[in-house]
Figure (cartoon, helix red, strand yellow):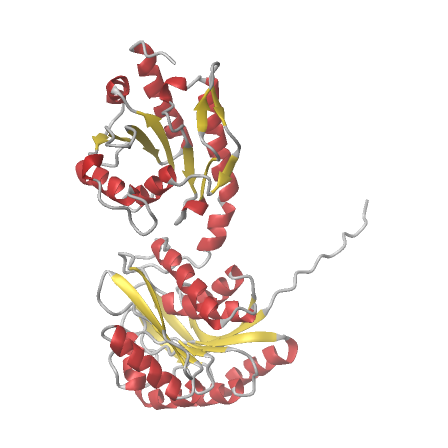
Length: 460
């Protein structure tokens, strides 16, 4: 009693953000620090301006005196082993010049996010300060303008891949090691981010689907902070950019629904995804246990039955838990071939992930056999949909047709379907797939179908 516990300090790379404060919490210094922590680094900050803003816009700004900005930088550098830095809102020529002078003294990766206008359209940089960015860009490991900012800095308006390349090349001519010209402001269903390098290194294109939302507040701050954090951890620039873009894509899709305007991106989304894995796997195990207890042999198709659970932020099959080897029939009941693990399902998991593109609340799925008895039993459920797999298109780049199957089901359903079945095709077993937003609902639907089969006299 009374003995002190031994401290167990955690050592993380330190990153410095030099940017403005956002009272709304979604952008600026606040977004930077959240992102840096989420990326496994320790964030420090230098506040260049205090803004009064929310999801609707910027109401006012108050620049911090240059002497105080310099004092903040000096205080951080004198005490912390800073491994990378990033800049955001700088506001005035005087601040730009002071920050350029200080960052030139640092022999560390520097990410320059040339913040000029807020997502709401409010200006965050004095017009006369634009030309001063050239000296700061010359110090940059990476400069990350959106299309509008690239146009101001290079006099080239990125309207597509070719002009984005030209703008990126112009930026590296100004002295940056690399330039990431972001494509979010360029119209189109797909976003193309163009990464240009100094020297003879070939330009890289990062292409991904656009998320259908205007809730992108803080996206530029978040991306540049994620890249800076990755650089602080020792990643190569290309990989830091790649992982940063993937991180932002998920953060935008699962943005925060706060305020009355376009909400901010979800800076901690990857942490939340990882934290939800254990309870998701437990929920799948509970459904599997109930299938064993209820002797679900009449539900098991020839290929085996599987139960899949997706985390609330799942984007890939490795973020879904399922029974490895599926569940098969035995003489006395059903048995999982192995345990529950993430990434164990391909077919059912892809169907569930594709269904989540239409209803993001869906978290669980199971595949069952289909025949006349099952078709009759499904009438006890609401919103049952049939799809015709004889009209199935060629597999996608992942070798799957589940995106088409889920899309077709939602086209035919008036609301989110609880069951989707098909009568098979040449070489394809007829199949039923149940969907649910929680494991209890999925378990109830399995019990309902099984109960109806027993009523109808279906045997094992």
